[in-house]
Image (tube, rainbow, N blue to C red; front, side, top):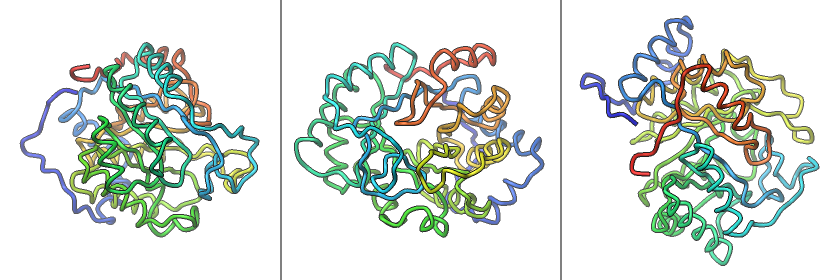
Length: 327
C-alpha cells in the first residue's frame, strides 16, 4: 500500500446516520468522484489486494443466520466436512499465493472457538500461513480475550467478524447470537492487537436505513476496521432468504463509495456476489473505492469467479494485484 496521506483530512469516528445517508444519496457521479478523490489520498488507485478464503470446517453450524447454507437449521444439501488437516490448509495457502493472493483467510463454521485440539490445529495453520510470507486471517465465530491473544501470538494479522446488517434489522436475520456478542468479539480481537475485518451483507430485505446504520456502527469504531467487506447476498436454496431478489448493482456501488468516504484508510472489499456482477459493475465498484477482492473458485461454500476471470478483468481494467509489504 502506498503512503499517500492527506494532511488536511481528519479521520472521523463520530459519523451520524443522517450524515452518511446524505453521502449515500448524492448523485452517483458526485458520490463516486468524492469517494475516488479520497481513495487516492490513502491508496494506490490501480492496485487491488487479492485474498483467498478457505472453508477449513464446513457445515453443521448451530447458528441460524438466515443467509447461510452452513447452518444446521436448514437443509441446503451441503456436505458437512470436519476440520481439515494442517497440511491440507497450507497446500491451499501455497496455491493461493502462487495465484497472486497475499492474504489467506481460514473460515470454520463454528458458533464460537473452543479451546482444545482443533483450536491448536488452527493456530498451527496460522503459523504456517505466516511462514509462507502471507497475511493470515481467520473467521471462527466468537472468540474470548484469551483466545484472541493466542491467535495474535501465532501471528494472526486479521480476524473477520461481520456485523451483517444494522442493529435493528439484525434480529430478523439471526436469533442465536446478539449484536452485542459480535461487537464484543471485535473488541476482544482489537485488544489482542489483531486487525479487524468487519462488514456486512446487502440484499437481505433490509432498508437503506439499515445499511446506513451498519456503516455508522463500523465507522464509529476507533480505529476503523482495517478491512471492510461489502457482500451482496448470494441467495442459497434451502435458506430462509432463498427467494430474495438480487440486489441492484448500483446499491453496491453506493455502499462501497459511502464506506470509502467514512473509512478512507480501510481496505474496502468487494466480496460475495461477484459471480453475478458484470465487468462494468465491478469496474464501477473499484472506481468507488473498492481495493480488495476474494480470489479463487469459492467463498467458503458459494461460487466465486475464479482466477482466470479475475485475471482477465484486471487485464481489461489495467489493475494490478497489491503486494504485501515485506512478503
